[in-house]
Amino acid sequence: MRWNELSDETCPVARALSVIGDRWTLLILRDCFRGTRRFERLQESLGVTRHVLADRLRKLEAAGVLERVPYQERPPRHEYRLTERGLDLQPVLLSLVGWADAHVPVEGGPPLVYEFRDDGARIEPVMVDARSGRRITPRNIRARLRSAEG
Amino acid sequence: MRWNELSDETCPVARALSVIGDRWTLLILRDCFRGTRRFERLQESLGVTRHVLADRLRKLEAAGVLERVPYQERPPRHEYRLTERGLDLQPVLLSLVGWADAHVPVEGGPPLVYEFRDDGARIEPVMVDARSGRRITPRNIRARLRSAEG
DNA sequence: CATGTGGGTTCTGTTTCGGAACGCACCCCG
DNA sequence: CGGGGTGCGTTCCGAAACAGAACCCACATG
Image 1 (cartoon, chains in turn red, blue, brown, purple):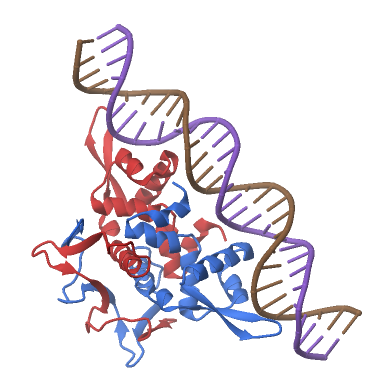
Image 2 (cartoon, rainbow over the protein chains, first blue to last red):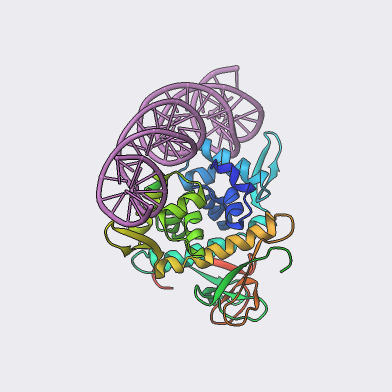
């Protein structure tokens, strides 16, 4: 299978990965969530080659995850900002962080923590069902094919 | 930066991606969550080359995400099963699915849905704070560096 | 003995990547 | 005006990863 054929797949995991499944893409997005928006800053933060960075930013823009916003003319300069679609990737990043802190830890505990903006309360992200609020675990849910009517 | 140097990074996203950031790895894990456990089944389901599949399975086993469980001797055969560490990746998969269904949809709506095993209630996964139950959105949380004492 | 199955390894040619240099439009400084 | 700095890429080359296909081996079955 060619990598860009993934977007034709029915499976939602495959479709998501066709956009963000690249090695560097999630690291770029991590930096965007941190507030890094400019090419030069991304490049020095990530250590990725400029060529690859330019390519990924173009693809993320084409996918509607980032948008180029001009911040000056003459010379034309712009920054890359997360769109709503990009912001919606936050759960993916948070899940990765949660998993890494639990299973690939660094000594001294998690180097960064999340807290609510309004009251500073520490956050421990978990997945629940939106309606019932019930906790989702690997064992208490199952997937079901929604063929014609679900 | 070399790809396998990622595991030395402090950033938890980078550490997670050093394990599962490969193109194929999350697709392999998706199949494992579906119950596919054997080399031959994975290969035909994914369309990945046998070489790459063998390599990724070895790496996932080394990372403790999958384990080889023998199911017969003579000839020795084994299957790959998710460990606890692997099962804990479920939120990552669920977030990807949620994002893809919202932003890279297929016509006719999501092809598979999740429900609770005990009562069959449809699940819509969202992230909340484990303690307070408050919903997590891209805008209402912030990250904070935990330098010495957090 | 021929065929099939499960689980790989070995080849070869194509993509992709990393590293470094180069290009270009502009600014500021003297 | 000349030289350096900045921001954002593009071009080039050798190295790594990949896809596709063939091959291998230990069995089981007929």
